[in-house]
Length: 124
Image 1: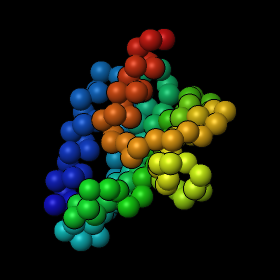
Image 2: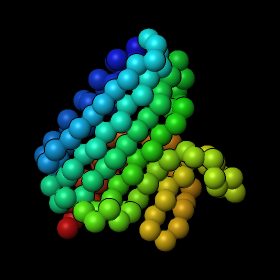
Image 3: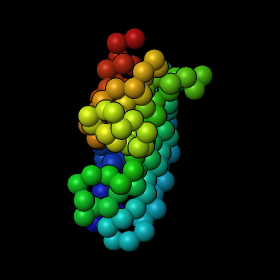
């Protein structure tokens, strides 16, 4: 089951090959249903997405996640994560870091993250 989840992540990423320059993805299975996936994707504008997920396929939600999108100089463009450090947000622990502030966010999926990046790249 976790292998199917990892495959779905890779399939979602492959949809965006037209904006991807290179990618590295690593997976680790802890059991049939639990695992860890991380990656680094460099896009055609030299921006970079680093991501990681800890997932149990018996649960809809991810145990832990981070999607950190940055420019060529490692400057933050945005980051989604579920670290428990903004309890005042109604979507706690889910949130999105922007350059100047942190806002509410639902738990994202990799496809939505890549769609957001695609929009940013194509409007440049």
